[in-house]
Image: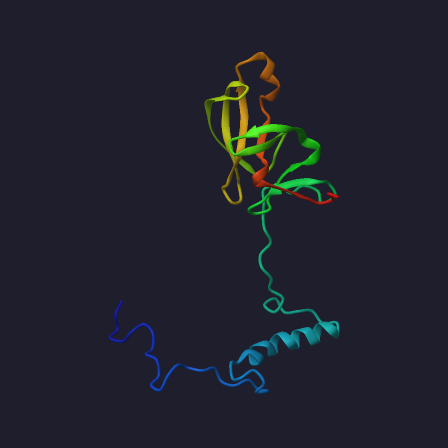
Amino acid sequence: MSHGRPPFPPPPAGGPRRSPPSPSGRDGGSGRAAALLPLRAAVRGLRRGRRLPAAAGARLPPRTFRSYLPRSHRTYSCVHCRAHLARHEELISKSFQGSHGRAYLFNSVVNVGCGPAEQRLLLTGLHSVADIFCQSCKTTLGWKYEQAFESSQKYKEGKFIIEMSHMVKENGWD
């Protein structure tokens, strides 16, 4: 879509552009103080009991996860994006081995996706497992036990392994 002129105006002769000096002249001509004037006016309005206009009170959007665990409970979250993963009450065992180190076995988890099931020969025998990943940041966290082929391992079916390197403890830990 060419109209015979460049998409951006050429730089002015004589060097780079400078912002106009601020009204107070205290910021070295960068214009920062001028940009803060509407915000300062909004803060003064708040001090006087007025509400902020929608644009002045804009914040970053909140993180959205599929499920949130209660703040009053000790929880485990994804170390990469802080998505809630499991409540401490759902922890079955801390003595599991993941692909890359220690792992915990949980009864149930939230905010995880499940890949296709495949058979793997693990330390405790042959299992059908599906990798699980964080729904928010897509990091592989561990796996879900779909089926155990040895009778002594049947208790793992439907349970989840999350590696410690992908979790952080939050809310109420001493």
